[in-house]
Amino acid sequence: MADRLEAVLTEHATWLTVERGLRPNTLSAYRRDLRAYERFLRGRGVNDPEAIDETSVRGYAALRSSAVDDGSAPAPATVARALVAVRSFHRFCVDEGFASTDPSEDVHAPRVPLGIPKALSEADVSALLASVTGEGPRALRDRAILETLYAGGVRITELIGLDRADLDLEGGLVRVFGKGAKERVVPIGRPARSAIAVYLDAGRPELLTRGRAGPRTGDAVFLNARGGRLTRQGCWGIVQAAGTRAGLGDRVHPHVLRHSCATHLLDHGADIRVVQEVLGHASVSTTQVYTKVSAERLRAVYQAAHPRARTTPVTGRNETTRR
Image 1 (spheres, helix red, strand yellow):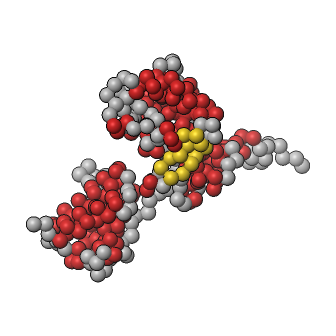
Image 2 (cartoon, rainbow, N blue to C red):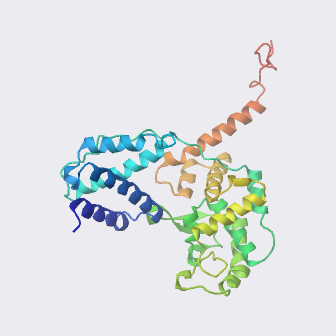
């Protein structure tokens, strides 16, 4: 018979799926972290959520932060993610009456350095988009995929989840379902609209007739070579292959095109609130990381172009200083 800890962890897993509607990848990460937490608690003889105290949570946080076998310490983001799962579990326990207090409330995660997304240059994006040649069904599909990822800044899961009913090519709009199944409508430009239209007309029908498409294909926009809905892994491979052909090496993956879309919008004067809406960020603070990228570019252009930004190495005076 399952003990109380196991039973409540199972209840929490169901809550994450049904109530919070987390994506499969996020659910898997939560489950991995909470399985490790369960092993830690059982090693301390704890098998009831009510018996978990702050000392136990701090001990687990210290364990997750300690060096591994090769002497390297886990990344702060890894430790922070593990503590997010633990906090979620304990808040659930209190809210559902499985425990009277939250022992994780005062345990803080390590500060995670704010990373700056690495966007492609506009020239690199052009090379990437031009790397797909030919007029076969897979080439038409791949061209439409690359154009859509860059034009709309959509996530890979949003792209492969598209159905034909989600497309308004005449209006230049695409409906996607983002994190937490949140729906949003994003605009796409003429090249992406054209690439999708050509693919739907001449590429998708041929892929669909190739074969073993089952009921899961539904009305999917992007199909694999067997006529089924394209998978995340399949889309990733398409983008990476295009990056290799364009001479960009392993710098290219689907999310890089999302970063590039956001950065280039801001570079060309788009309002940050508009970019937030396009990307589907819940908070504008998430979008603001892209302004750091643009600020670096702005500084580089300023240094190269403004006459009073350059100084001579000998005097330290501006080269164009007038007396």
